[in-house]
Amino acid sequence: MAYISDTTNPLSVVILGTCDTKLLELLHLRSRILLHAEASSITLIDVGRSPTSDPAVSIPQGVLLAKYRSSPPSELSTFPQSKVIRAMTECATACLQDLYSTAPIHGVIAVGGSGGTSLTSAAMRCALPFLIPKLIVSTVASGSTASLVGETDITLMYSIVDIAGSNSILDSVLDNAAGAIVGMARAYQKRQLVSKSTSTAASIPGSPLKQKRKKRRRIGITMFGVTTPCVDTIRHHLTSSSSPVSDESNDPEVFTFHATGHGGLAMERLISAASSGLDAVIDLTTTEIADEIVGGVMSAGPSRLEAAAKAGIPQVISLGACDVVNFGPRHTLPRRFSEEGRNIYEHNSSVTLVRTNEQECKRIGEFVAGKLKAHCARPELVEVVIPEGGLSALGKGGGVYEDREADAVLFTTVEEGLRGSGVRVVRDERDINDEGFARAVAERLIRLIEKGESKGPEVKSD
Image (cartoon, rainbow, N blue to C red):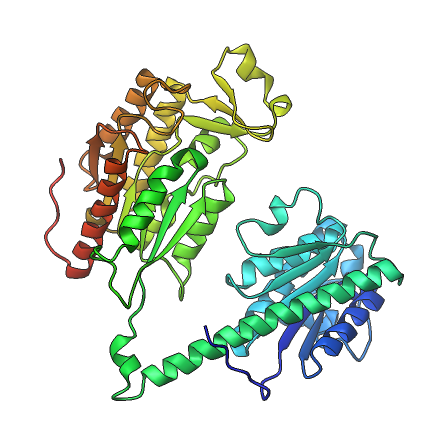
């Protein structure tokens, strides 16, 4: 991609921080950003408990509360810390949304301890779309960060020392952070300029770009290590020159989401995105539902499967890796699984698996059928494909997780639950990683895409 230089438009960077406790550090960060990008426009937002006065603060705490708080302003100094964080998170989120909707933002950076990181990460997650650079320098960046990052693209930088006063280590960390946000913001700005320039050229009558430019289909696929061969084959099939959804100038973009909980959430967030949503989905690996049902560590929550169904986009769903529930290292596995004599498999030193039993498979099947029946806007564009030969590399014939009885319960529950729903359910005797199964899944999606575009007659259920 050829970048376009732009010296007339300065970078626009937002800094979030609690100025009542971190003013010196925030001012140092601001000065280093200006050093790395002299013409930058910086908006410093004070999200602290108490008001702080400094000419560098663009949006003081009082203004933030008065303009963006939904409930009547009150004295935050009397609030417990948790309530202060909730109130300021609400204001910071609304402020970021307002700024983003009215003028370009090329990057957002924050500095904080545990409370400040919780506050600013929530604002970034809720207010900003994917791909806008988001960076937080934090004292808790090296711990458990799932609640901070979620399914978004927030970058965390560990502060090494506490963010309290000036010293050579912290000053250097903040300098690195300033350089990082400037670099990311510059890259983001240049991509925006290229996109704008290309769109402008394509809009000119007679432009060759006007003839060639066509929105690339964006297809999401869910994957796990034990379903990787299937996903690789599907991806190759969809992007090959012989595929009906691919042509020489308009190959589809295939986005693979690791079904680790946050992967499924990221896919569903992208489906729901107004400007960059997915056009079709192969939800091959729905293992996150097993974790939600059984209590594993890779659940995507109770709303899994809803986004694509509500969007009415073509999708093929399978039951990949619903034979496994994921936990951490073996010593973290809840004792009840050993006491029940469950089939436990140590996938690696960090991941321990438990095989789903018949009762759990029934609940998984009910979840899948229930979500699709309740939320499918266009059931004729949805198919569920059941790999009777095995749900994963571990569950195929001879595998450590082969359990035909449990699988049968899952398959029957899905079929019976979707009967009369308009969603087509298809059984395939092959296992999920069989090349023929993978190609068949890809072909099914292609037919659904073509059907959705032509709005042709509904396909009859098997």
